[in-house]
Length: 179
Image (cartoon, rainbow, N blue to C red):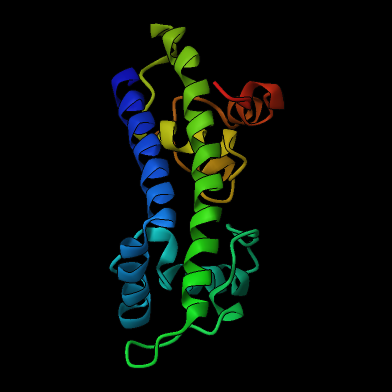
């Protein structure tokens, strides 16, 4: 599980580096613009995909809170098409990438804070599942609607009780300071 968590930490770090590069490189921005205008963002990073907007609408209709409340909404931009490109598309991409960097940095810090928890794990507690790691990263990052306590309560695969999940979710904020 520690190895799996280390891979997750490396992947999150690579994702942050990738998004920072995209924001600076004009060629990447042009290609992302084409991907957003032609394919609705499906040919780029997940944060530019319009399907995320559909997911947000579905959760709102179901009465669930928006899983990405501070994410810039695509409807607030005049996104062009590949025959009539718009500079607003570039603004949308930069805003979404800036949001995704912050979102991913929170998840990165949360994953780093799970390392000592797993290092001190005792055999009597059982082996945590990979889904537990993903859920705890989201809990610690402050994204409980993505995985969180709901899954802890619904899935018996978790080795911790829902009260233990709430304990980890309520760790003091100083634990999420820069590792």
